[in-house]
Length: 452
Image 1 (cartoon, helix red, strand yellow):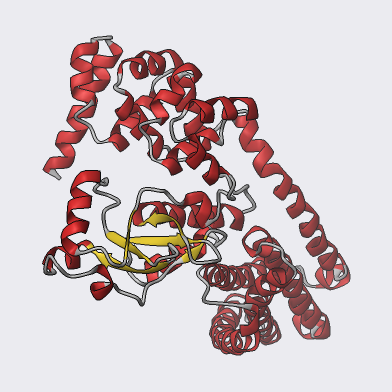
Image 2 (cartoon, helix red, strand yellow):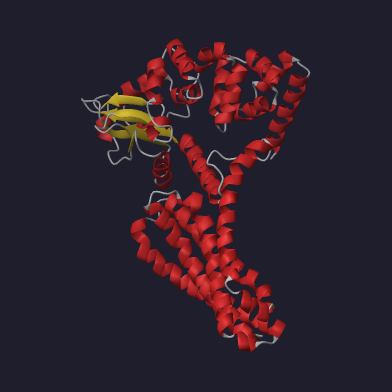
C-alpha cells in the first residue's frame, strides 16, 4: 500500500509539472513511472499536451507506451500524439508484435511507408499477414533459439551477447538440423547444468506449442491450464515462428471476458466506456433494444390471448411479474454459465444430452422450491387455494423450461455458427416470458371458476 501511495504521489506531481509546462522536472518525474502509469497520464492530456510531452520523451520510453494501450482507440490517440513523421523512429524501439499492432491502425499507404522506414520492416510485415486474433497475430519474434548440439556454456555466452529482454527470457528453444522446434530448456535448467552439457541432453521434449492460425483465446487457455510463462508458435511443419508471452495472453483473457460480457447484453465487442460519446453509446445500444421491443411484443400478444381470463380475475395480473421474473432469473443464470463454459472450452455441442440431463435436475429442484414458496405467499395474500396451486405450478413449469432454454439456446446458436454470447439472453428472456404467461394464464383459465 505504501508503494502504491508513492507511485500515486509521483504521478500527481508529474501531472502538475506537465500542466505548468515545467518540462525538465516533469521528465525526471515521468521517466521514474512505470510505462503503464505513464501511458495513463499521457492519455489524460489533451491533444496539444500529448504532442508537447511525447516530443520530449525519449523514443524508447514512447515506444513502451504503445504496449500499454488498452484498445485501438488509445493506440490511435498515441499515434496522433507521436506524429506520423516520428512514428517509425519510435517503433524501432518497440517489439515486433507491438509495432505490428500500431501499424495496423494506419492507412494502407502509411503502413507501407512506415514498414519501409523500419530496419526490421520485413519481420513486422510478416506479422501483419496473420489475423490479429490468432497466435500468429499476437506472437513476437523476441525469442532465443539454438541448435540441439549447442553446449550449456555456449548458450549462456550467447545469452550474454544478445541480452534478451527480461520479460521474454524464460526459455531457450531448441531446434533440430531442419530448424524444427524439438523442445525447450528453461533458464533455470541452463544455469544449473554442467558447462559441457549439450542442449539436447536437458531439453524438455514434452512441451506445448500452437500453430500460427490458433485462435488467441485457445492459446491463452493452454498457457493458463499448464502454468506456462511463454508459448511457442510454430507453422504447420513445426518451424518456430514466434513466441506468445504470459502477459500477452493475460490481456487476451481479459479482452475475451470483456467481449463476452458486452455481448451478453447486446453491445458490440469493441465495448463502450462510461464516458464514451452519447451518439456512440446510442448507436451501440439502440439496435438490440429494438430487437427486444419485437420480442416483448410476442409476450404481449401471448397475454392478449387471455383477456377474458384477466377480466374475470384481475388479481392474476399482480402475480404475472413474479412468474416471468423468476423464469428470467433461472434462464439467465443457466445461459450465463453455458456461454462462459463454451468460452472456456468446457462445454461443446456434443455435450448436449449430458448438459440437458444435469440442468433438468437443477430446474426441477429449483422450480419445486420456488413453486412451493410462491404458492404459500399467494395463499397468505389472497387465501385462494386454486390461485396458489396455479401460481406454484406455473412457477415450477416456467423455471424448468427456463433452465432448459438457458442451456439449449446457447448450444443451438453455437451449432448454427451464431455467437451465443451475442444473442442467447434475448431469446432466453423471450421464451421465459412467453412460456411463463402461457403456463400461468393457461392454468388459470382452466381453474377460473375457483379463482374468480
